[in-house]
Image (cartoon, rainbow, N blue to C red; front, side, top):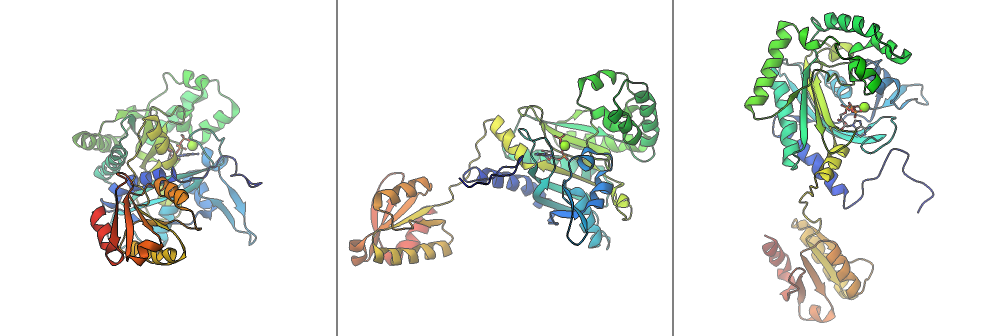
Length: 420
Ligand code: ATP
Ligand code: MG
C-alpha cells in the first residue's frame, strides 16, 4: 500500500465493479440520446458566483457544501456541486438559445463535489448523469424528462423506486404562498438557523428532516391551495401525460428540493432500499434561473440522476447487470518466436474488432491459462515452437475445453466466425 489514501468521502472505481458504473451511465444516457438531447461537457470548476446565484445563497449546497477556493491569479472559483447552473451558463455563452431552435436539449455526465458528512450513498465526490431542456414552457417537456428517467431505471431492471411529484408555483402565486407560510412558521418554536431560513427561503423549512420541526408543521399552509390557475392547469397536464404513458407517481406536496431555482414541476426519484440516502435522482422546472445568472427569460426543465446511488439501488434489489466480458480471446505464446508471431495475431484480431488480450511477461503455460480463464475470454490462442513449424496455432474453447489447430493465416477469420 502507498502512504496515501483516497481523500475522506471519496472512493475509487476499480474493475470489475467499475464496469457497472459505466453501464449505469450508458443506461441513463441511452434514452436521452434517443430523444434529441445532445452531449455537453463543461469545466469541473466555475466562477463561485455562478453557483451562489444559480443554486441559491440560502441553500446548504452554497453555504456549507461548496469547495470554493481562490487561484494564484486571484479568481474565486468553486468545484461544481451540480450541473444545471454550468450547463445553462455554457448554453447562454454559446448563444445556443438564439436562432429559434428551442428547446435546447442537452445531456451531461460527470463528477460533482460537495463537502458533506460522508456516509453510505453520500460522498464528497460523486457522479451524475443529467439532462436539461432549455427555453420552452411545455408540460410535455416536463413529462418527457420524467418518462425518460423512468425508462432508464427500468432498463436497468430497477423496480422498487417511486416518483414523487409536486408543483412549486410560479412568480405569480408563489410569493403569496411564501408570505402565508412565513406567517405560520414565525409562530413556531424554531432554532436561530431555521428562523433565518424562514426569512430567506421558508419553503425549505418544509423539507427539514428533523422530527422536532416536522411535528410542528401539521396545519402549515400548503402550496397546492395557493397555486394560480395557470400553474394548476400546467401541473394537471404533466400528471395526465405521465398517466397516459403508464408512469406512476405520487403527489408529494411537501417536496420542495434543496435548490432555490425550481418553479412549477418538481420531482424526485426515491428508492426504498437505500435507507436515509433514498433520493436516486431529482429535478424540475427552473423558469427563473437564466435571469438569475444574467440571461434572458428562458423557461427550462431538467434532472440529475446520481450514478453512485443508482449502483447502490441495483445492489439493494440484487440486480447484477449482464455485462459482457471485456476480453473474448486470450493469446498464450510459448517461447520467443511464438511471442512475436502471436503478438502480430493479437494486433490483427484487435483491428478486426475482437476484444483480445495477451499473456505478457513470459508466463508459463499454467499461469497463462489461469489468466486466460480469469479474463472471461471464450477462446484461448496457444502456440509453441512445434505449432509454428506446422504453420498453425491451437484454438481452445475455454468452456468446453475442446482444442483444434487452425492455420495461422486463417485464424482471424476463424475466430470472427466462431464469435459471430
Ligand atoms: P440529498 O437530499 O440526498 O442531499 P440532493 O437533493 O442534495 O440529495 P440533488 O442536488 O438533487 O441531490 O442531486 C441529484 C442526485 O445526485 C441525488 O438524487 C443523488 O442521487 C445524487 N447526489 C447528490 N448529492 C450526493 C452525494 N453527496 N453523494 C452521492 N450522490 C449524491
Ligand atoms: Mg444534498
